[in-house]
Length: 313
Image (cartoon, rainbow, N blue to C red; front, side):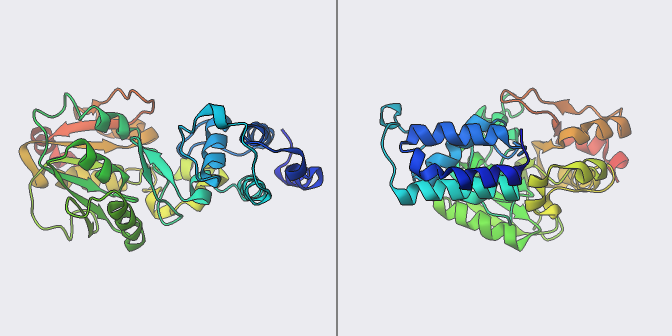
């Protein structure tokens, strides 16, 4: 591994565009270049190969399942220079690939993203793809996605439950503008509804079968130690007080009022689960096993939220 600025200078000196020709050449070169750098993977992909494929295919307007027999196709000089420029920006400015190409995948769906929202990566995707079984007794008709960001969870829930309507709530108007792009892109205008609200404050009283939330939950210590890539994401969507639980506690104290009698809250708190369990050892959080990896997602029924509400207040 060498210093990223040295790597950029080496790329420029090597005149890569004259030595590489095919899709296969560039996939190998980007992979090797990423491996020689000290960039961090944590925004949708966790390794250099997957991120290399994401960048190269997006630069060439190719789908992720592009047939391998065409990997020997030669690139134009314009295409080569576009990929090289993206690689240089990725390693010199430590910008996540999703922001460079303005797209990220979640639950098998493609979403528009930019620096107004965090990059979709919630392990809640595993629960969505299982229809939240066995947490729900029946398919939900009304769903609330609190802290929706790009709208990826709201839209994925609407795709999973074709009869459901989903309210997509966020404090940030910037985030909601991105969510609206994705709602339109996925033809969900009549089923997913963006709402600006500070948590439940501006919401009309309603009863949801399911509340899903991936709120800001990074504690102060982790926020200070995060790799440079995270500095490109809105801090409003990451940090939540010293223990990472300021917003989660507000949701826990109010969610029961917005759930049907059999309704369920599903919430992600990531590494801050250790703080949550330490502060509320008597609360029966149902920590979920996540097929795609990840930790820190719990479920609570309306009955449990009501029973233990005095703790959160």
